Image (cartoon, rainbow, N blue to C red):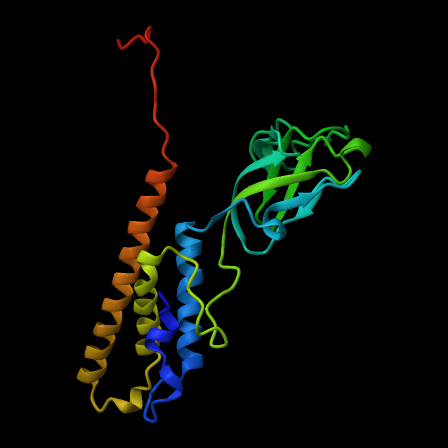
Length: 237
C-alpha cells in the first residue's frame, strides 16, 4: 500500500489549493511514524542486507561501529558457520555488575577466532573476543538484527511503499493525523471548546497508532517464541 500517495495533496499532479498541510509536511509525519513503529516493535528483521549486517574483521581490532539503522542485535555468525555467544559489555570477562575503581578488571589480550560478541548501546559498537588475529583478517561476521527503515518515506518517492508490514500501513496515517492535528494552528479555532474537541480527535488517532504498536509487538513475540519439549523422564513433581 502506498500510504503517502493515498493521502497526498498532489495525487495525479493536481495539488489541492486550500490544503492545510503540504505534502512535504505529511511525508515528514509519516516518516516519523514509520521510524517510531519500527523502533518500538522491532518488526524489521534483517540478516540479508550486506551493508547493514556484515562486519569485516581486521587483525587486532576488537570493536566495530555497526550500521546506524540497527536497533537490536539477536545473533552473530562468524564466517558462515560458527554462531558466536552473546554477552553483556560489563560482564563479558566475568565481571559482575558495573565495573568501578573498587573492582578493577584487566581486559584479556588474547587473539584468535572470536567466540563471543558484545554490544555497547552508548557508542553503537559491537565487540568480539578473542581479538581477531591474522588468520581472521577479512573474515565476515553476519548479524541478525532489528533495524529502522533503510529508505524512509519521502516526498521524492511517491511510488515507494513503507517497509513495515503492510497490515500496519494505515496506522502510520493515524500517527500523521496526530502530529498534524496536534500542530494545528490554534488561531484557526475560535473557542477553547473547539480546541478541546480538536485535541480529543487528535488523541484518538494517537491511541489507534499505539494500539497497533502493541498488536505488532504481540505478534513479534509470538513469532519469536519457541516450543518447549520435555524428555520422557521429566520429573513433574
